[in-house]
Length: 453
Image (cartoon, rainbow, N blue to C red; front, side, top):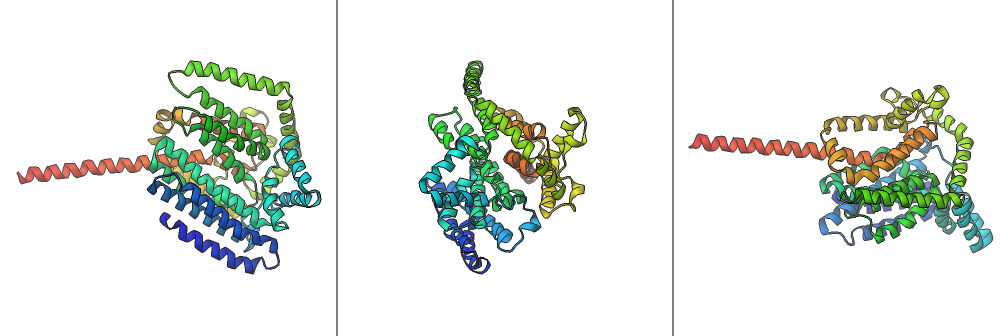
């Protein structure tokens, strides 16, 4: 099935073309999604397979095109077939932010573009996705949900490749393939990729930086650092507080580059981190961003509560429990395991998907439990930056942002780590069965030889 990615993509492209003529006949702005799909899919497939060996390139290209195709179909289902309300669409109007900046560019030309770029970098970070979406909307000449869906689908498909390459680097090719397949077909990732939220863009930027941090076994290289700069900038303008978390994981990688020089690197890392924090604090950047985070939390707190109640994905934990000693453990359970099995029939179908996914993760982890030793002990130095990021990010949303109503969405940020853990468990179990089978075969052969003699 994986080998048929190119054929599936071509079929999907022509299906998008035909269905767009039918579903979007009265919305010509949506038609730009057709050539955009072909350009993004073709260019990515070319560059993904350009420098890899034949077998590895073939798998990566096909899994990317399969992931992209199924996300395009999901986008058509949501916005062509009109199923967005059925599956839940919390930020149904977020794509309009792209059209607002495009309108500004129409009115003020290049000066409008520079002003918006300056605004999302220096003044109102966390809305940088509007510039990313606004560029194709400017070309289209109007607001388009399918354009946003295609861009997000492209980001979700690239994330599959990032997860594959990261997992291959740390755990090997077999585990990497299973990780990529899980990421490509995971229902929650599909819905986030095909939707009009910025979530999948943010997750791609975060995990691209993490991949650059761990891809070189000998430590960070100059090229890794240079490539991380645009990803860090894109992350800052789309989710500014995540930059601090990713930067902490990136710097942690510097500290633990090698076991021999661990103390030296630790001292150097403390000096570097301390110096950076002093400079940022002296410039007022840290205070400004934390004040912005506090304002953001206050402004959307009621909105989070409404979403929690309407989607059934969680609740305002800290509003129900007095004292953090009870609230934090409860919030942790919600973040990692909500929605729970008894919530299958509550909320939207998206909530039901999440219930099934949580059960699947728990079952597979139980089956592959012996692989936990490999993940957390044998490969600890390799995955330490990833663990640092996941712990800090989850901890911030559990403790800092207080509301767990959006647990389903924010949990997706740390899902790539679970994909690798589950894939390692499956690989470990499979290898164990193969070893047992080989031993039984040798034993049977030895018995046959003994009987013959």
